[in-house]
Image (cartoon, rainbow, N blue to C red):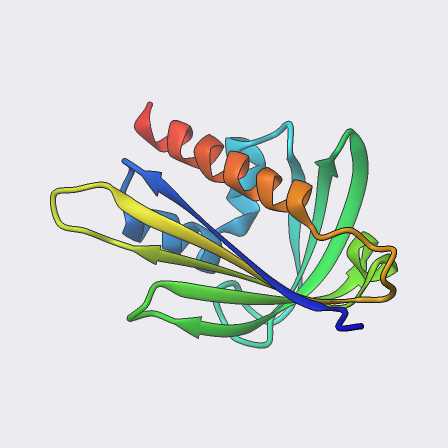
Length: 151
């Protein structure tokens, strides 16, 4: 039984795609003010904001429960407006052997921009569900960030 999976979802945003990318690269600690019901805090544990190898600690609320995640920025592609986070500790590691989250922004001149979330993971067992509710969480988080910037 193959326990690995990949999930991809896209969401259109009207707000500036460059700004959206900058938030996830350089300013994830600002997300708690844009979506306080979902993200309580984001702290830098090692390295510098926006650099590969930096370690970030997230406190968030998912499915009504307070959770944590510690990740390492695994890759940044400025041209593609992409940031990939590898989860190394926290609640997700109770269900998954590996878990990476990639957020990628396609910017279009004069039009809506597209945010693509990609999860790549390996479950610890066949009993673990696919992370659909976490993906829904990320889509709503995207909308919260967009609403904050459209004010």
